[in-house]
Image 1 (cartoon, helix red, strand yellow):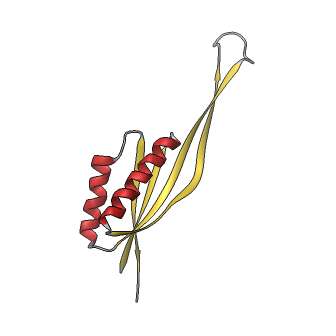
Image 2 (cartoon, rainbow, N blue to C red):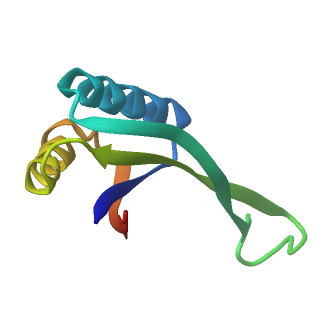
Image 3 (cartoon, rainbow, N blue to C red):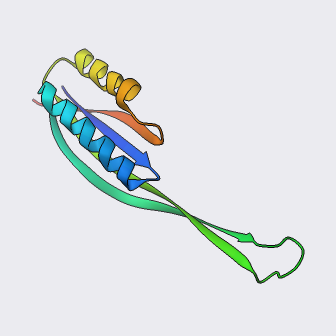
Length: 113
């Protein structure tokens, strides 16, 4: 049974996201303990807000805001042991992950017969 990790990185700022992904890939390639695929860009989710400028008058005068969440996915297949791979990923998540970035880790098991 082979394990693959899906890392989803989310941020509101694309520059911060690309810097973090480049740092992650650089550190993982230096270890040579993972086969790396990605980064794969996922669709950007946009939330739109409309707010009245004045609460009492000028009902037609409004402001509109948009909040975009950019997402990238990296597929990691460990060439080392599973426990060692988990430790490396947790170490990156705790020490090197910048603020303003969210990382979700998902384990995917596949059978090789």
